[in-house]
Structures are given as structure tokens and as C-alpha cells.
Amino acid sequence: MLIIGSAAGVVAMGMEKIDFFWYLKKIAWLALIGFLVGAVAFMFTRTLF
Image (cartoon, rainbow, N blue to C red; front, side):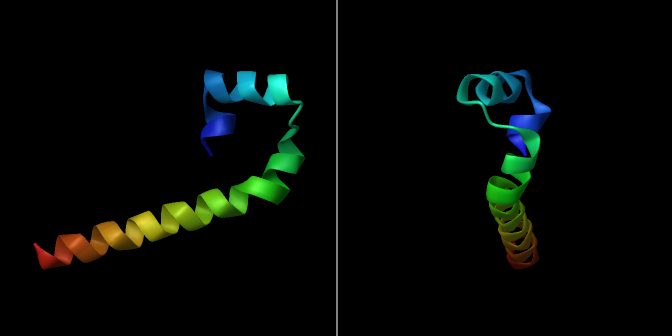
């Protein structure tokens, strides 16, 4: 979700002509999966150590 939450993301969207709904359909679900996998990995390592 970095592309919609930072100045660099807004510039990238402008340069590549990416609109918000295209991003939601094509990329946001991948970002969400990455976030969830990272959260699970964090919780897993926290229980081990």
C-alpha cells in the first residue's frame, strides 16, 4: 500500500499513469497477502524466542 500512502507513490502513479482502481484490482491484494504473511511470521518468531 506504499504507492498510495507516500509522495513517492503518488509520483510513480503519475509517471506510469496508474489510477487508484487499477492499483486496487491488480496490486493491492498482493500487498495484503505480503502483509499478512509478514504478520504471521512475526507472531511465529515471537512465540519461539
